[in-house]
Amino acid sequence: MLRSWNLQVGPQLSGASCARVSGREWTVASDKIPLVVTLAVAIVGWSATYVVGRITSAPTLEYEVSDPSPVQIVGQPGAQRMRVRLANLTRAATFKNLTVVLLAPKETTLLGDAIEILPLPPAFEGNEPWKLRGGMARYTIPKVQPGWEFVVQVAFTGKVPPVLRFESDDSVYTTVPTWETRFVRYEVWILAALAAVWASVIAMFVLVSFGVSLRRKRPTCNPEMFDETG
Image 1: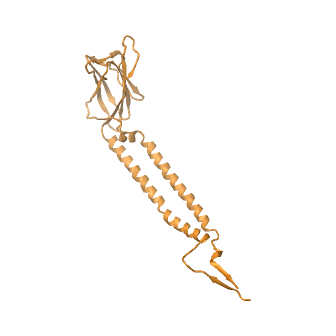
Image 2: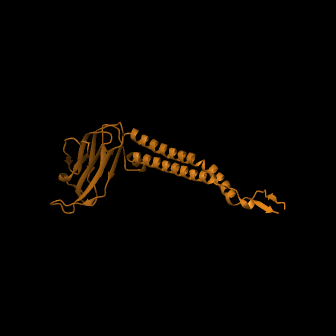
């Protein structure tokens, strides 16, 4: 008895053959993943570096004023305290004779004995005392080096907090905290996070590609493609 083998040739594949084709299609499409991720991380990293460079190259003084909170002071019922944080965000500019000015609105009284400036090491505020005159308090910091920070604590009575002003021998750009200044503060962490994301995506791509390559090496013969007749 003679046996004949009829090989079915056609565009339709199934089983392992389809798995092999799908694996090839996935590999071709996934080849672009590392490039896309690298470009995205590079763009975000460059943007962060550009913003940080623009802020740190300008004479930028960041200040943040906290909401007043009650404080207990002997002989001063209803006293409140306000905190002001100052930070020199530049990397090369030194602010000379930076004067912090506090102006008390009507019906507000500054409590001179409870006004102080606290330098965050290694900053140094100098040895001059606060100068009080009527409803105004002034304090001059001789030098504010790059990266130095200070905290000013102001005690007062009244419903309206004092108004903050600055004076300096040099040109100073003052700003409240923004997303740009936060980039300056957390630049290292942002770049580290971007590097971690990039490494994680590349590692996942390598592992998946390795798994696909192993699957493609398996036998892919589909017995349904052959029809045994006798």
